[in-house]
Image (cartoon, rainbow, N blue to C red; front, side):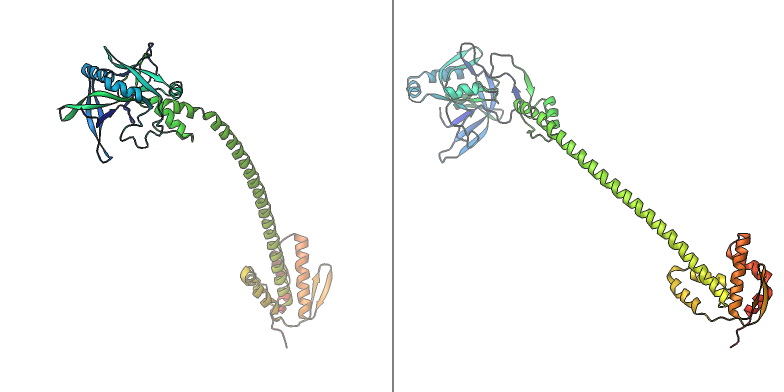
Length: 389
């Protein structure tokens, strides 16, 4: 036998968990293993402080249990137990490859007896206060034995070992061996499908929980839902207030835009009316003054209607020289007769006649001008003659 090959039956990533919580037999004994062949990780402590691990089979049969018990009660081991004892730990901090996996190095108790029973090997523990505190906690705990072994054989390409000496016992929530307890056992996947759905929903709600969280960890995460609900309610109220504020701002800006649009349209209409009135005044004055003829009025009206060139065209029509000749005419203007002796008189006469026609018939300027022109051919013939210098 060699003490350099060890098995520790704590499983960091188990395929299955057993939901029975840790408890001792009614007589104070706990099971270390039941009989059978079980896969495990063998660890060899090398002489230079390093370790080598490999997959192997643990043959935990009656011979194994008998040999382990015999070694436990041997005179040499009795003396060792008297001096140091076989320790019980939280996990396996005494494994050669433990590293920082088990930060808690303190003993939680001692193994005081071993016993072979029909269904496996049992130990009787004596726990200190720290061990009792672990037992009374929320974690489900199981015994996990650490033992040394001689190599027995090789079967189907795997090395088989029969452990023969118990070195220490760990308490773990994830036993590699199916250790029996007094209460009912229920085997389930880790985590169960329903638990996975709960974890996914918790993460979606912004609650931090690991994908491989235990039932206790999920319960603790679920307990955060009330706080999360309160937080979300507060955020909802804040967002609602912000929305109301932004809505009011948008409504106010919409009102301002509507008012500005109305003012703009009003200014455009007012400007258009003023511009139209000014063009009409310019044309009326030009026709009356003899600077343009009635026939030229439409051409000049088109030129003056172009906004970008209005200023230049307005200046041009104002600067035109009268082209009518001076001639004395007597015409009827309403109920009175007027003598027209010069161009200025003719222009005033035309203006008066057009105004009178508009007042009497309610027609527009162009129609009134046409009627006046038709009714006073002599006046308009005189206006067509070249002016005399």
